[in-house]
Image 1: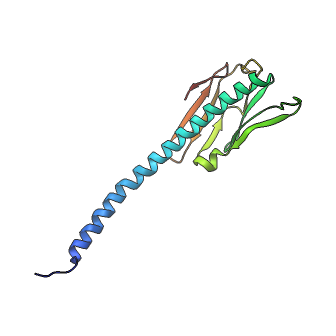
Image 2 (image 1 turned 45 degrees about the vertical axis):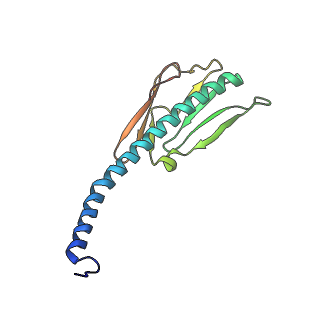
Image 3 (image 1 turned 135 degrees about the horizontal axis):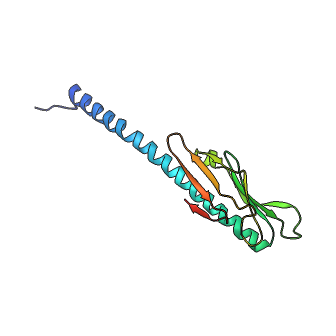
Length: 147
C-alpha cells in the first residue's frame, strides 16, 4: 500500500478543525488585546498625573494635566525663566496608540506648587474601547485613587 499524500476527507477534516479553532481563538485574542490596551492607557493616565504633580512641586509653579478625547499631555511653566507654559515630555496620542477614546469629566487637572489640585473636585476619566470600558478617578487632592 504505497499511498502518497492525503485523501480529500482527511484534508477537509483538517480544514474544518483549523476553522473551528480560529473561530474560537480570534475573538478571545481580540478581546484580551482590547482589555490590555485599556489597562495600558489607565497606567499612562496615572503616570502622567504623577508627572504633573511632581513637576508642579519641582518647578514651584502650576502644572496642568490636559486631556482630550484622543490625547493626554502635561504643561507647566518654563524652567529658565519661568514665564510661559511649556509641554513636559511629549503629547501622548492614546487614541491612535491604544485604540481607545477618553471621556474626561474635566478638560484639565491643575496642580499648585505644593502638588495639590487647585479646584477641590473629583475628576473621572472614562476610557472606552470597542467592547469594554473602564475609568480612572483623580480625587479632590489630586491623587489617582481608582485605577
